[in-house]
Length: 316
Image (cartoon, rainbow, N blue to C red; front, side, top):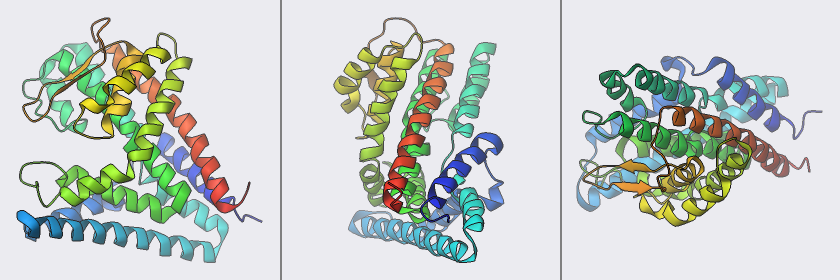
């Protein structure tokens, strides 16, 4: 009776759980355990040269494979018990691979700090949103960083995991989250220049489609929201998306800059950028506008993921 519809129900339940309940406790959160496993493995791994690259590739493939396989066999076991069991437990498991509510919450905290004028509180909030050094950020730069974080995370916080689930089931969503977690922890220059290279490149690869699709949906969303400019979002996205070091992050960030009519600037010695054309000064309200755009994109993205899942399971 349920054949083909279980996947749709799992995804719908997962989104509902995220919006209503938010994150599970740390002790039960798979992403937290992915992070702990990464920490244990990277501490004992060689970090330099070809050996470091090979070790990083092995860690990346092992953790992605482990979590993907565990999710696959768990899903099959749940289905063998009953479809309803799979939907309920599978929905809770899938929820742990993405987050909308937490992103909204952290962005809202940043805005409240900015509205209060407490720059030290603003800087203290930044590590939950961006990886850059917050110690010298101005209020304007912190606002830009928050808008950038909301924009960039449209892809890897929820649309990417949803598409991975729609295409490959729970195993796809968990493998995606494992790779993304590895990239966030070791996929950057400096101490992890070699060890994190495989995680960074694989994360770039799996986000090629989600990032560009997120940018397209952001342009569509901006056409529906008051005060935003879809034509400008499209133009700026195509002209400025290549200005970031990441081949993927620039699509949604530049699209958001164009939609809002502002310039998003990152000042950093290892690769700063300017996205968009400033028609007005950034203001804390732009954080709220970015979050509103995020929710509209999420609505479109959910419909798209449900359609893809339907095609995979043969409903259509």
